[in-house]
Image (cartoon, rainbow, N blue to C red; front, side, top):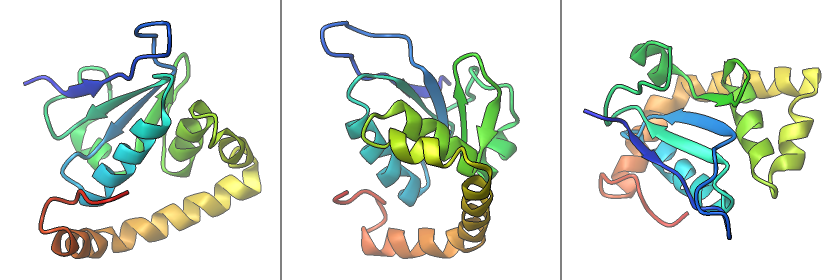
Length: 143
């Protein structure tokens, strides 16, 4: 089974080579909402979104369990990053979020962002259950 990959067309350029690849858990209701928002903001098609729940992502050298445990992204020509660093990478590829992505590169802010992300991971299962109940199981609602 192939992983689902969606590239948004860049205005007047057809499809462009993505600058960032993002691996996400398509079965996670909160992840689905967040990815839907990022897709809408990525008007230039700079991000390749790979749903790791749909199939084995051949584009990633990491283990599926590792991919599901944390949010991962890779900027073209760079190493894979996860957690707060992955969010910073994604945000830098979206013009409206780029200033936040650049700020999160600063070591004290990246350290704080990573601590917040780790805290979120501890409560994520409860938040997922709550989101499923609120959305009738789909996890998709207005973003």
